[in-house]
Length: 305
Ligand code: BEZ
Image (tube, rainbow, N blue to C red; front, side, top):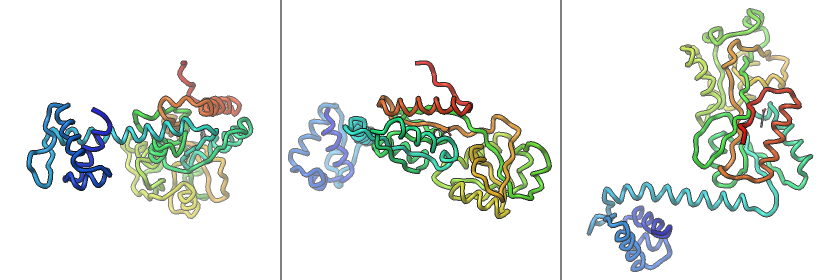
């Protein structure tokens, strides 16, 4: 069985008609019918019900169809990923979620450019979910996100677990109430979460933090992004739980307070194509660990090779 057989079979199954499938594939109908016949003979099964109009798949045909579609999609991904890995000129496309801009990302990019002048670096803001698709399609080479998404063609490295902190509007009674706050102190506040979409996102990590402690925030306000959440906090619309690096984003109308539980963290995850061992990616990963050491930041040490 060859890939061509899968493509032909999927076209016939989707068009439910040999003439239309042949037009879609830009081939004549008799060779298409022969190929499908050969495929059924090679597999020793019947994929289409005999003499059905429009054509109907048998149960076996439906099983074969769902796997054939997946295999063809994986083949297309393999093509685009390999093309990207084998590019002659050196370039690195980086996908990132907005909140990583308040952490080490700007420093990483500046230092990488200084040390690797020959590499053309480009930056693309996108959700962790979009990063996975963009990696598969070869639109980016590396992604920095916060959500642990399982995918057999993606390698993930958890770089560090960032503590969550609370953003409150100036003058809020909780600011002077205690040195550190707990989630229990926050349940009756309006909790401003972000990003609203796509999900799962950092918003779900915050909601899960409450849920895991059997707590339910009384009012939840979903917003598009971190900057808007902070603006709404400043306006006194509620409070927000943000990654601790946001602390660097000073605003005169917002104050940050620590949370008491060290398990309240959000990971920073680097995602790459599985088995993509490009030197530029290795250099970027080494640079990140070097910067963590220089900045005396806690990080998750890489597993020994
Ligand atoms: C960090 O803040 O640790 C970080 C941010 C973006 C990319 C890599 C690391």
